[in-house]
Length: 94
Image (cartoon, rainbow, N blue to C red; front, top):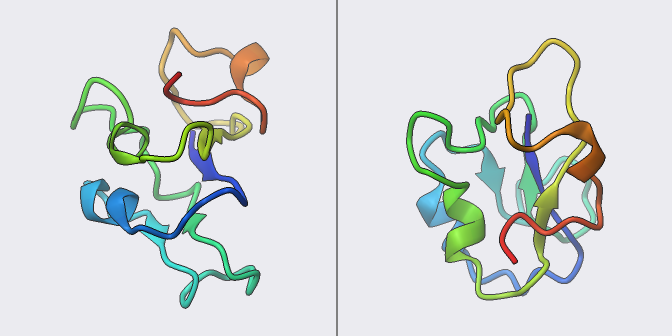
């Protein structure tokens, strides 16, 4: 259960400030060393229990930057967002 930040990120930091579980790191702390922001899928809770929708996506000024990542086996996820909608091409907020 996680969101993913795509390469169109403008590195504004809005998502980091809004994440209630500190699952997002900036390009300096990204384990991919690709110069992009990163969401730790083992920490991201899609704001379940915190907000009605992922706060990072609501705060992001770049349309299509934050998308659904693949469902991780064994983790709970928002019931109304199935595996068919989770891909690198489905924005969290449209």
